[in-house]
Image (cartoon, rainbow, N blue to C red; front, side, top):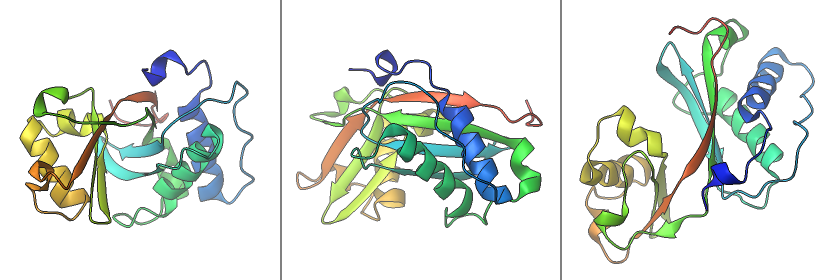
Length: 187
């Protein structure tokens, strides 16, 4: 099932922005949006500043309520992504916020199962794992094999061709994406 079919009106990107704004400014966290409790297989919050990645963190913990998963991912993306310093208050208006709600992953049986731009990857082997959201392949102009190889090497710390190993689990998922552009973000 496509998560977009089950997720009604809540403004998850707006909620993520309100959470990161509160955390960065040291104010009280906002109440989550009203709406039904939705199921999910994970949530990632991605921040872009002037079109460049500024943070991306998430959780695969499907036991968390969706609002709690969005809140935790927003806090992590703003404050705990090891690739970037914490977001400063002066940056908030320049940030674009994207929330990706993951569907339940399914095993990739062959390379033909993978549709670039539609599927994200979760690669697992020997206690290591790596994940790429579907938009990564499109944003970086990757073909299927490069998408798999980079996920293995850059995210899971495995050899680039580990996806070919029968001992490596390759799972595919789709996402429902909620976006909100910052009031001062560049076009």
